[in-house]
Every structure is written in structure tokens, then in C-alpha cells.
Length: 83
Image (cartoon, rainbow, N blue to C red):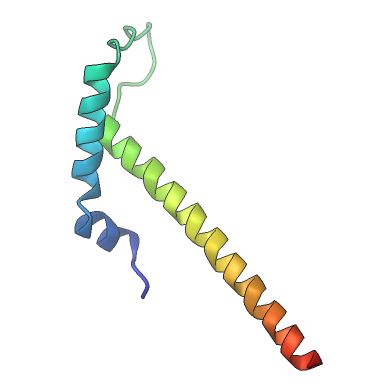
């Protein structure tokens, strides 16, 4: 079964999970330092950034899993051809 990112996010309610995680972190941590002069205003919420980081990690892990499965399959092919 293959899930695309949007299905994963909506079925597991990941944006809401990230919002709760950010709220809990803000309660546990001291407030951030004030912004310095200049710089771009914050465009994305902390929850959105956390969600992007989570999806990036899942993407990387899925790639590693697929590559390791491909390596195992090619090793089996080589072994079965020898036998």
C-alpha cells in the first residue's frame, strides 16, 4: 500500500499533532529572544515548519527502506541464479 503525503497528513491529523507539540514545547521552554533589527517577517507557523520537518524525515526513511528492499531483492536474485 502506498500513501501520498497529503493522505498521510490528513488521516493522521499531523498538522494538529504538530500544533499540540508546539504548544507543549512553548509551555516548557523559555520565551524566544526578541527579533533583531531587519530580517524577514515569519511567514510560516511553527506547527507548519515542524510538519515539514516530519514529512522530510519520513520521505528520507521511506527512500532508505525502498533502497534496502531493492538491495535485498537483487541479492536474492543473484543467489537464486547461482543455486
